[in-house]
Image (cartoon, rainbow, N blue to C red; front, side, top):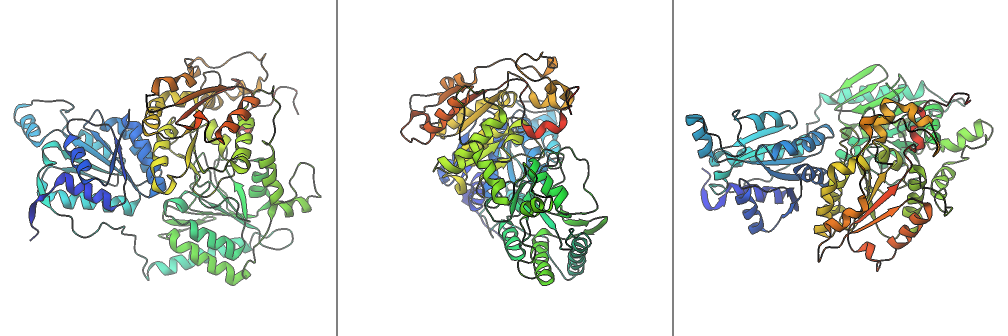
Length: 615
């Protein structure tokens, strides 16, 4: 029989378990129901409380922290706080992020009063399971802890599910239980993977053989196989970057990544051919991936609308290995895990084609085959060089554009700065514009499927505090409409002294991506004299975003705001970022980037109808 000692309480039990999982920071907004737990958390000393202005911001920070560290946590108070956290938890569920949502609820005594007398107190609902019911939709385990004797088992079950399923879990704890005694923690919490048994081996073998057959049935004009790998989000979620690198190096097969898996491995690997994002891809990458390669092998890639931008389906010459199964053309092989598939596929390809037998530079091959056409890179290195060189110089009077900014930033990150950076990109034009930055492994975060606008601002907090990336400064790209949703989280950056650089893409107080989605013809009207026919509901109230730095600045916590509109001003700013003594590097830097309302990233050009008379 397990002894209950005065030394362990429900609050201490949960604090110990979170620390055991390596969590160093807990994000959230306090409330009286949460107070006893936070007091215990500080007494234990292993986990730092990070109070944020909003519950949504806490969830975004915990989400980004978990993407880097492997698990994160946020804590809020009942109903009013929990429902504000729900959106971030929903995003973590969709994007397979292990996040612990802790919801402190009214005391057990008050619930008894409600049942007997119908008396409600603060934050309570006549539906006693309202919080639990909604969180059941966005978690893999949801528990209400109302009995201290059962608390340990419920906490352990939820945390085990969080690790094993790589998705959020929910713990609702009644206020008067935090200080109640419970058994000490027992065996460590561990991930429990789905077992690979003798029953699974034949299905794995069939899947690998089907992939080999697909490769053989789609040769290039010279008769050689010409596959390309499309590495995706589950490579990151399952921490399989090493296995992906092994497969590529052993076989020589060229590969691209999805936007959501950008920088999951080093982007200077010899066979990395770029980020493929459907019709929104860089034209060179799209040409290689869709027209030159003869079959595509998706490994952990999700076929989301963002990943296959502008395209509605994958074809019969595709492999898609994700979500616990493998589709090869029109055949499907269930219960094949990615962790077993990668090494098995590597061995099969090496056995069939020899070590490095699929090694190729598809840029060079395509260039030679088509008779060296103008404008196409003659090799992979020339394609990479074109991305780096395009932003190396600027004309002082030139007005900034989306593409001009990201080209210039790419050169800065690759050639000018010695600091480490984590690029955190928001949804919409910011994400599309940043996808071709050349970055080291782990240097990019985005929310590719849920696409909650403003996510990046809160996420930068978690990215900066995750132990694995604590040495790197966050560089955020966020639209002006998105920033208006979550600008309060700059307060957290300032309070913690994070040296973040937040580029607010101000395209004339305007929801640019929404206009692109509903009426892309708007963007066919180019130039400063073009009439403004934006839909009224996409127009934002104008803000002086840079001036918010003064709002958040404290006596010991500086923040700086700058407004730029021309390339020379961007050049000056980037020069200042390389000088550690410059005041802009003392705390968060808020950069308002003033763009023309008709401007948009070139990657979105496929959506814009050509003006009448254009070829």
